[in-house]
Length: 269
Image (tube, rainbow, N blue to C red; front, side, top):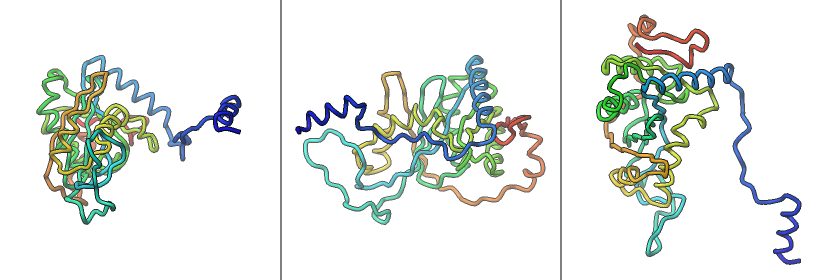
């Protein structure tokens, strides 16, 4: 029997090649549905007021050097890369942190060379606001930030709240922090509105240096008008910083927590 006939028989019986789809939740977080309803409510309120809704996250770290990358690109000849991806042969690593403006379909990517800390995130937010967003939202007194519940913007870490309070004071802006429930990071808009398209721009091209990565990132666009700005941040950040004891004692004076879901929703004045 030929391959053609086998394929026809499989199709008649409803068989075809399918990819595995990540859809089974490992666990259900308490107040999961309630939090998604709150997210939609907050987003509508901020959009109606023309206040910024920013989705933030850190993309997977990347090594700098002549290393293999998945995907393909046009070239006139075979492109040779290292046969092993050992970090000892790299020229450092890149930490891509993204800020996606939901209202304007604009992405701001910072390529860091230090550590992914809350101070790194706040520095990126400060730069993007001063260089871009304050002119797009001249009347906004509050910004909304959508993010995951762990990592450099963990909802349970005091150091994150301390750095956000400092940022709020410097910018003279209120910051509404809204975290997605555990195991729900895939619903964060930045994942499918910005990072997926950046990955497409990066595929099949070795990261020879950080300036080259910046140029690739800024070329990212979509038919729906996505615009991406990229910057390099070479500042080195300390890890395991200690929280100021005065902040622990008085942070309730500056942070207002949601009545029902305190750990995921709070306003920094």
